[in-house]
Structures are given as C-alpha cells and as structure tokens.
Length: 288
Length: 330
Image 1 (cartoon, one colour):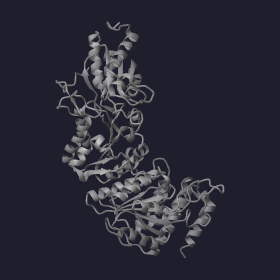
Image 2: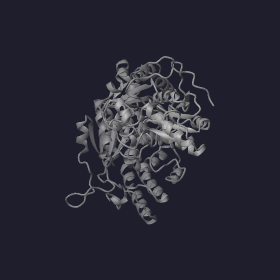
Image 3: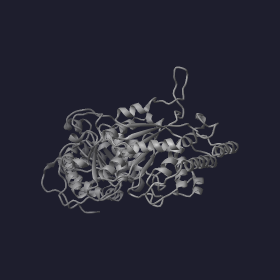
Image 4: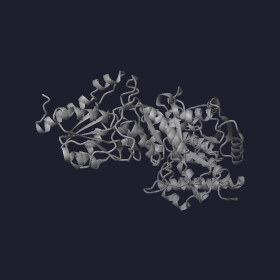
C-alpha cells in the first residue's frame, strides 16, 4: 500500500480481501464485547467501505477535516461499527478504541456522531437523511470550484423514506457528477412486509435503479463483495460526467459467516462466545 | 432597573418586513461570499426573489421538498457556506423537523433557518399556513438560537448579527409591513431583552409583531391611569431571564404578548422563569390552544384575541385580581 496526504491508497485485491476479513472479525468481536449492536448490515457493507477507504477516497487520517478531502457519508448509520472499524484500520483511531463502542462517553456512538469522532463527515442514524447532506457537499464543491468527490452509502431499506427521492430529484436536476450514491442492496430490511403469501422479508422497493434512472442518475450494477468489481464500478461512477451515479451493490446481509447470511435474525443480535469462535474460524478459512 | 432602550424611532411609519429580509440578504451577500440562499419554491412570497435577481449563482432552488432542503443546507455548511433557508415558518419548523434535529441542531451546523409568513397573519391562507408552534419547537431544540424581531429595522440588525455568529439559528419573519419601532442606530445583541417603555404598575413582556400592540396597549392603559412597562424580547432562546426577573421585581405583575401559542412560546418561557426565580402573578395573551382560519388580519387579531385592547384588558384583569385596582375603566 502507498499513501500520501490527501491522496488515496492503492491496495491490491488480495490486500483488500484481507482487510475485509479483518474488518468483519473486528465487527463480530466488538459487538460480542459490547453485547449490543448490528451485525447483518455491517457485514453486508464491509467490502464497500474497505474498498472506498483503502482504494478510493482522497483523505488523510492525520487531517480528518482537511477542506478538500473526499467526503463519505454512511446514511445507513446503524452499520456504524463497520465504519468505525474501517476508520480504525485506516488510522483515524486506535483499534483498541473499538472496545468502547456503545459505552458511555465513547466517541463511537451507536449511530455516527460527527461531533464525537473526527473522520465522520455527517451525523446519521435517522434513516433516509444521508443523501441530502451529500448533495449539499457536492453543491459546495461545485460552487467553490473544488474537486473533491462525495460518496453516500444507502441501505436498501431506508430508500423507503421520501426524503431519498426528494434528494434524488434535486441531485439529478443539478446534474451533480461529483456525487455518487452506493446502494447496499442486500434485500433484507429489519422486519419486512406482509404479502399475499403471508409475509415477505424481501426488499420493499424492487428495481431501485429504474427509479433513480428516472430522476436522471447514471446506474452502475456490481457485486458488492467482489473488490475487483467494486473498484471497476467506482471507476465508472467517477468517469460519468453527465450527472450523479448510483452504484447498485448487490450484497448479502451477514456476508462472510454462513449461519448469519440472509437471516434477518442477525440484524442486530450479538453472537455468543461459541458463535463468535465459529464465525472467526470461518472468516480466517476464507483467506486460504 | 435598566433605562429605556435609546434607539427608538421618533417618527411613525411602517416598513415591509419580508422586503427588508430579501434586500438585506443582498447587502450581506455583498460582504460575505459564503452566504447562499436555498429556496423551497416560495421565493416570490418570502422575497428571496430579490436575492435571486442580485446573486443568481448563489440562489439554489430546492423545489417543494423541505426535508431535502434542510439536509442540503447541512451539507453545504460543512463545506464552509452559510445557507439561509427561504420557506414558510409552518413548513420549516414541522415539515423538516427531524432533519433539523439530526443534521443541523445536534452537530450545531451553521444554517440560518428563516420562517416567513410566521404567526397567524399569513394573507388569508388559513390554518395550514399559520405557524403558532414554531417557537415552542425551537425552544425545545438544543443549540438552536431563536429570534423573533419586532420590525424591519430589528430584523436587519438581527440578520447582520447572525452572519457574525456560527450557531444554527431560527429567524421568524412576518409577511406584512409593520410599524417601525427602532431607529437605524440599533445593533442587535443575542439574548438581550429591551425595555421600550418604563412603567410601575405592570410589566408587559412581548415579542415579534406583538410588541407594537404591547406598546399600543401601554398607551391605552395610560389613558386609564395604569402605568405599564414594555419589555421586548427578540431572542426567545437564549431568553433574557435577568431582565424578566427585574421587571417582575419592579412591577409585581406580568402580562405576555405573542403571535404564537401560549403553550411553549414566550408566555410559557416567562412563566417558567418567574416560577423558578421570583413567583409573580401573570397572564398570557397569545394563541389559545386551537387552530386558526383564513381571514383579513384585523378580523383574525380580533377573533383570536391578539389586539392591543386584548392586551390592555388582560392587564386590567390581572391588576384587579392582584390589587383590586382597575384604574377608572369601569
């Protein structure tokens, strides 16, 4: 890996894969220690965050508020532990501090608090709110003739909020090609919807790309766990000049731990010691 | 007891408030390149159109989508801009309330939230567009400064002060022209209430456009042998509790006057202050716990109990209850 102030790291696919495993392991250990926290969503969004922070964003952990840094907003704020873990591995905080997650006086609040931890570009947690501030940052870059980019990570559940579509309309209207949204499209919300067959926990909004496209967005589909594909998708987002891009990242809730994958019961359930050991063994095994 | 505020107008005239708002944004923008305006498709009502004509590159139309607009403002604020919001008070305080709470108030981002067409005088638009809970909402919102000017002069002075301050702020703006109370030497101070008239029998505490009617009430009372102080509180948060307690100590009877619900507004704030520090009998003149309707200003003020006469009657009732004195009215 190579680094310089306000430049992006360049990491190989194997380095990124290893970082993803480290991140997932730390997420599981931290939530186990805290006895609370989300699991399924953080494991789902891990590769997206690792790829951004270790291969894309122009940032400097030693200057977390640098004016021309790239911005990254985790709109699905309940996956905060994934972001904190990636920030720790990237050097914004010590890995040991992850143990304070959710504790009183911690900088690592249940949902990201930009006033607590440098490196957080926006406070989130009330769902559906992250895209609008990202739009504001992208507008700020354009008004000031600055070349930083803004990335906003959305959950597929939170796009049920109307504010997302208000922002989609306005970003399209302003043709903000310095704004990229990434949809963590794991198709599993917290609870779900009743339907004719009784009940479904499938994605509430089918084909979100078509709706974003109707508002003038560029649509890029990708595997959200394949680092080569993610890198390629983010390249295509940056190369698009006619407006904002949404990367529809097809993901798996609970990714990386077989007994957690695609099971809504792991939305926010801390693993016990036995489950943690099984999960860690499986993650480590995936690298060989 | 403090003296009467020195910068009072000596001539009787009215000035447009929303026009002053739009024009002063232009003046401020000439000095502050970071000032931008976000509009919710109401610029020709709020008079942000004056700004749009002068600084088209810094006028950002956000359409009829207030939640997004307030979120965009938060994002802009993190990049060094100072966004001013152009929409109606009824919408900014309620339509985008959670956005204000999470991305503006909690992180203390420097967004100037202006609520036009505030209170009940909204040009015959009725209960959907009248805004009588906004002060209550922002008083309960940590970090948000809340300003309710009495006239165009004070509005301009407050806007100037807001650009020199980096706190999120809610500024109430009225639709119609109103009598000018202050002279051009007025400099706005956050959290300072101003004694506009000195009297000994009762203290009237007022805010916003009701300060004009509080002064009129004091004149009516003088004709009836009652000497009233008028203390104008343009900042509802932080409130000048010291001035309010001084007034209560000097007069022993307090009446509040506001174009807002008496629940959570100035009346509540004064009652909270007095009951903790200097328990004093008081009455609250303002919007009772109800919804309004469309109608001309005079009819609305009369029907819903907000005229100068209503203020003076509240004073006389209070004095009758506390001292048995009622002047020579009856």
